[in-house]
Length: 126
Image (cartoon, rainbow, N blue to C red; front, top):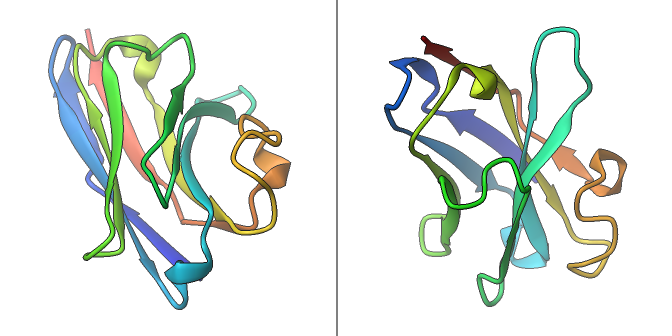
């Protein structure tokens, strides 16, 4: 499976962005897809995950109520709609996918995901 993230950019605080992650090469085997982010000098952190088959979702507390993860199975694409952005959301955002583990198994741990996209930069100015 190959993942390609896009949609990042520069936005003012309070603004919105929508990230996309296009998956190719056998997505029918994907059980879950997720977004992680990594700010400069910090570890990669979990943002949100979606179960491909029924769109069950889980969010990090830091983004709950502001971000929405979704997917379009017909387009093999996952999305992250981000609103009410703040400077603390500035990071490189990565999409990830996995077919080995059940939905809840380590869903917030980067090492449980098998495939990764290249990342897209999101910068929020204050």
